[in-house]
Each structure stands twice: as structure tokens, then as C-alpha cells.
Length: 91
Image (cartoon, rainbow, N blue to C red; front, top):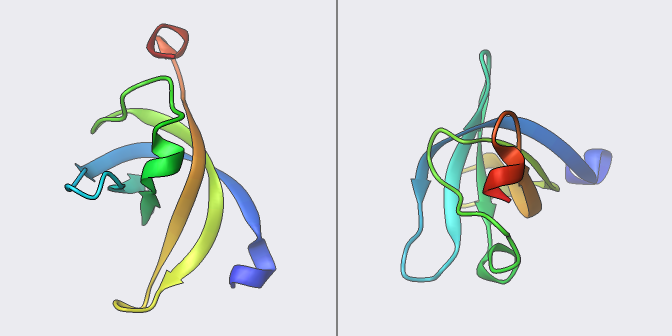
């Protein structure tokens, strides 16, 4: 799957947002019918111009990967933008 899709853009709502001491962020991206895990590593996170938080609707870019420890698909994000009303204010 990783080689089939390559880089993708996905839109959804942030849920279960976590930022441990490592500085990376982990969250679930969901819409009305599906959800998937996502991670953004510290180096990319520092380039964002807004604070990511639960409930935000975002458009994110990255690669689909398999987190082997759990056997789950996840998205490793390298950039994201807020979506909807107030997006420009947040940015």
C-alpha cells in the first residue's frame, strides 16, 4: 500500500490529540464514515503557523505507512492547513 499511494492529501477532524515529551504529535483524523491514525514529527510540527488541537478540521499532506508494532495503517504528515471558517485567522 505504501508504494501504491505515495504522497496524499486528506481532510478530516482531529481527535485524540496527544503531544508527549518527544515533541511529536499523535492524533486520529476522522470524517463522518472513517478514521485513521496520524503522526507529525517534531521537525515538521515546528513549521506550522497554528496550534493543532482536538476538534479542528484540517487538510494534511503526507504518506500512508504501516505502523508495524500494531499492524495498523497510519499517515505520517509533513504539512497541514486549517480548513473552514476562521482558517486564515488561525494561520
